[in-house]
Structures are given as C-alpha cells and as structure tokens.
Length: 78
Figure 1 (cartoon, one colour):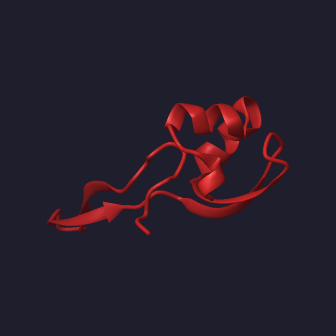
Figure 2: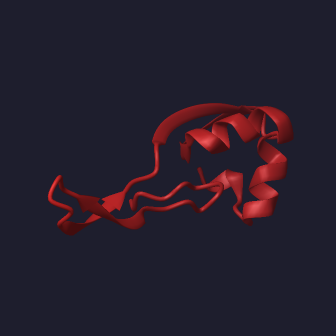
C-alpha cells in the first residue's frame, strides 16, 4: 500500500535538504500517516484506515461517513 491518506489523498511532497554550505539535495517530505481503527456507526462496526493526522482532526468535526462520501470510497471494502 502506498504512503497516501485514504480519506484526503495526501501524499509525499518534493523538497530540498539544504546543508550548511547551502548545497541542495532532493528529499521527500512524507505525510504523517497513522493506522487507525475508527467506529463507523452507520455500518455498526470498526473500520481500519491509514489516514493523516490532519484527517483525524477533521473526522471529529465532519464524521466518517461524510468524509468517505467526499473521498468517493466505499467503507464496506475496509
């Protein structure tokens, strides 16, 4: 499975590591992903998702069903 948030689609960002002498080398800035068990009340069961910490904060406000509908995913597959 790729390093991508299943709800928001966030993924790694390209950037530079800059040394003290200001040499630039390519690097990846990865998303802060967490494997989380979330209670899905409509399905009356737990769902295990790999989501970013930003998505966890948004889940508390919007709810799992609304975010899954926006992302276009079917929670029965998880």
